[in-house]
Image (cartoon, rainbow, N blue to C red):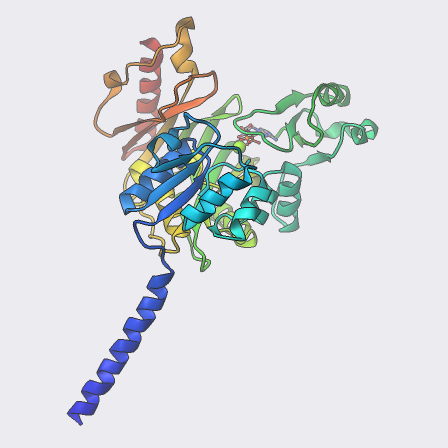
Length: 404
Ligand code: ADP
Ligand code: MG
C-alpha cells in the first residue's frame, strides 16, 4: 500500500511539475532580447524596467540621440518602414512592444506575423486615427463628446451646424501634446484652417466645460487579466499635461465608471500591454477623450509611488509573465518639466536640480539634448500622505525652478 501511495504521490508531483513547466515555458526567459519600437522617455523607462528584470532590449528609433536608444543593448537607427531593419528586429528579439502610437500599423502588422508583438496592429490602427478611435468608442456605446468627422476639406464645405462651436479642430493623425489642434469659433474659421493644412482628415470637437480631467492606466496580459492603477487626475496647460494628482479627487462612482470603460476598451481591442484612457468630466458626467496604446505620462507616478510601475507591467505583459497586484504605497503629485524651463531668459541652460533635491522628491530627466518649448524633458514626482500638501510642494518646486 505504501509503495503505491508513494507512487501515486510522485505521479501527482510529476504532473504538477510538468504543468508548471508548460505554463512557465510560455514565459520569455531572461536574458532574452526584447524589442522596443520608439526611443523616447517611455521607451527609456521600459528599457530600465526590462534591465532590472534581467532582459536585454533592442530599441528601434530613427533618432540617433533617442533617450532609450542611448541606454539600450542595441539601437537600430532606421525608419519604421525599413524592411531589412525590421528583419533584424525579428531575428534578434523574442518579443516586441511599442511606446509611440504613431508607428505605422503596417510596421506592427509586418512584425506580428513573425514574432510576438504587442499591442496588436489592429488596436494601434484604431487609436492612431481620431476618427476611427471615436467610431470605435461609439460602437462600444461609451460616452463621447459631440464631434464632427471631417474626412476631407471639400466635404466640409456643406457643413452648417453652428451648435458645435466653440470647438477644437484636431488633426486625425499624428497629433500629440496638443499639436495639430486649432481652436475655432465658426464654420468659416474652420474652413480657413482646413484650407491652410496639408492634412486631410480632422475631427471637429465641441469644446466641453471641463470640471476635471482624469485618466485610467491599466495593463492587460495575454490571458485577459487586467491590473488597474489608481485613477489619476490631470491638469493640462496649453494642451500639454502639466500636473497629475494621485489618487484623483473625484467620487468613487465616477472612478468605478471610468475603470469599467477603460476595461471595456482594452478588452475589445484585444489589447496586451499597458494602455491609458483619458477622460473629461463635464457637468459631473464622464466623456472619453482618447486612448493611448502605451504607457502614459500620467502614469509616471507609478515609478515612485507604487510597488510596480506601468513599465514593469508592460514588460511582464510582453514576456507573458503574471502581472502584479498594484499597491499605491504613497499618494503622489507629478509635475512635468518642459523645455521652456531650459529656455527661460532667452538662453539654453539646464536648471540646477540639485537645489530642489529632498526626501520624497523624485527627479527624472530624460537625457534629451535639445530643449524645445513644449518638449517633455523630465518630470518630478513628490510622494507623501496628504494630497493638498503634495500639490503645494510641487508648486513650490516649480516656482523655485523658474526663479533660479
Ligand atoms: P493630445 O493627443 O495632444 O493629448 P487631446 O485631444 O488629449 O490631444 O487634447 C489635449 C488637451 O486639450 C486635453 O487634455 C484637454 O485639456 C484639452 N481638450 C482637448 N479636447 C477638448 C475638448 N473637446 N473640450 C475641452 N478641452 C479639450
Ligand atoms: Mg491627450
